[in-house]
Image (cartoon, rainbow, N blue to C red; front, side, top):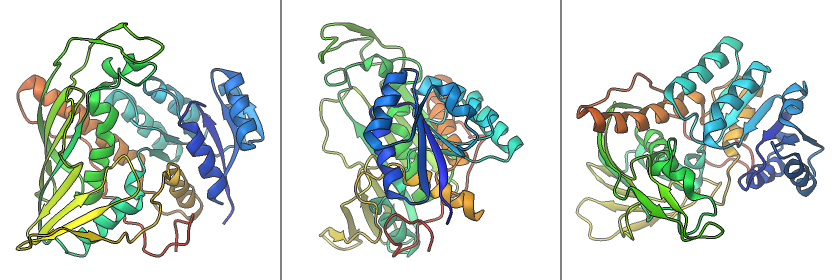
Length: 367
């Protein structure tokens, strides 16, 4: 299969793992990278042997590049995605798809008009851990799915992140920061969501940074930091999702899925591997399930590779724009429901992503 020429915009910390993906997947040929700070782009290009370091404008003007990987900060996601699409390039963007529903919808509309692909993180649901859970559900191991729970409980980012202010400003908060991992995993396991409701609060209106280099500076909190959502799925399952920056510690599981025949303990959706545990009805013991799929290490970039395969073969890709927009819509819907005191029925939907085949050769995504 002929490789796909790829350019990266945004050369911050996360760009390293995407550059490594370009060295592992033969279908990806990363030929350029760009950043608002040209010297940072140049350094990243030299580090990974990428042929060209560009300004953003130069990268978008390069006719050789077919896919743009957008690794900018969330508030820039929409502008960069739209610029890439207008330049005739397919785009894969880090989570979330955009900050607002309107921007997310505009991205999809332009892509449809131009016949281009949109993909979006997270792609952790393609890892061996969650793919093993998907196979258990599809094979009927837990019977009829009843519901699920998800918990992302933390004390916030001001104790370790060098620039934590964003997480407490519009576009941030625990739901928009970590919710994409959980909701994407839910949709992969259970399918699309038909209705949500929720309750939110700002527990501490002012927070103090204890990390360096901004130790002692104050953050004025603009967004809810403790959110509880209820998600009704089209298949009838009901899930509870709590995301919080206000919890000192927790022993709650990341995700559990409940069925008429048993329960699956799903691994952290922010990772690719396991472990996976299963408990049958009537049993007092949890059984660790051997992983059935690969991609158990940090495999960010597998979603881009899957999109590149789809581009060459004409099939659908899994971490696609419809999925990313449905996740964005649902996250906003939980916040909207809290404000209005009602349920919210998403205007969006998506196909449940197809599972990866078992037994794929390493760093390939088609049989």
